[in-house]
Length: 413
Image 1 (tube, one colour):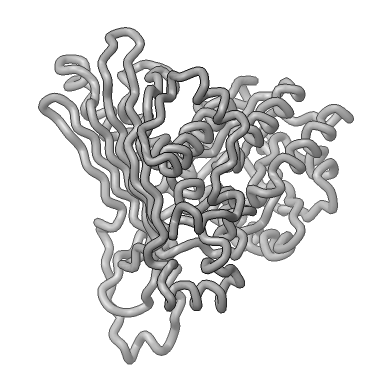
Image 2: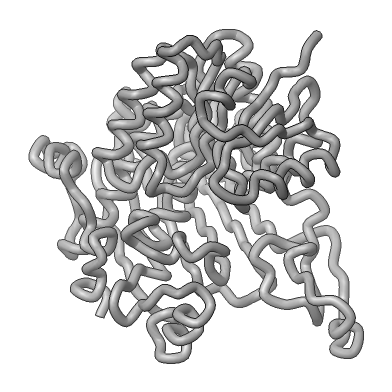
């Protein structure tokens, strides 16, 4: 049987992470890549890891004609344009079996809706890549506690946090190109995984109905004089003029449409976590049972003293977004699998081979975008947003946060 051929649009950090994840998935290969920069480097990396030839293609159309499914990993500000090119390629005869888009689906609800509309024109199955819903530790916890859910009732509270010291690329820091700050970048993860944990057993991923959201955004570490200078020198982004939030926290209330029971998902995200590196923390609490996940509680720790640390300073060989190459370090032996990347690829490919959407499709990604944007609206208005209000629903369709407009100083200073 021939391998299922994936094509990447974009060759940056997230593309490289998915190359690592592909090593653990049978029956697939990375057939090609289209990217403005980094295509040759990604090809070399893919060959080094033995996941495919990863041939660079000059256009999206060429890539679509040499792949079974394309994965859109390019920056947020070019997503709509690239999705249009995918739709045009399919219309011209590209025989794709599916379309994958990395989170977030869009910088605004309007952009996310455009992408959904374009994908619907192709009539192809889709996958929205939200890796944390596919984390083995999360789903093992849900499996282990299934008998308790059946006898005692479903989870009532889920809490999720994702924190690290900040993104790799300058565009991620620019709210006008990224679509905001840490809420847009990582809040989408935490809101989605909270919704996932709270959904009762056997129900669809969007079963619980969002009814309200509270949210606070702040510029803390990267708003200081030292932080602004470091960011300007390293990334070329001036947070004294065009700031984005580096901290957010909030609460989404969901309603069970069958029982009327309300449950809560709390989210906290920051670009100011200066400990070992990326930390994902999740927990869920139900009547008489609970679980907790902390990705920095690794089974492997190493120690590197000051003298030895001078020999090499590749901090991220131990952990994504690591901020130190010395001292007592938490080391994750297989981050791509730990964070759910492996399982989301398996889910998408199996689903496409069966001619159906993945567990999470683009319409689901649209709903997550809507919740994130409602979070920005709640923070701006300093009040709880009623997600069931038709007026709010209509306003979100046209809404662009002040932070995403480059006017973050009006709400963060």
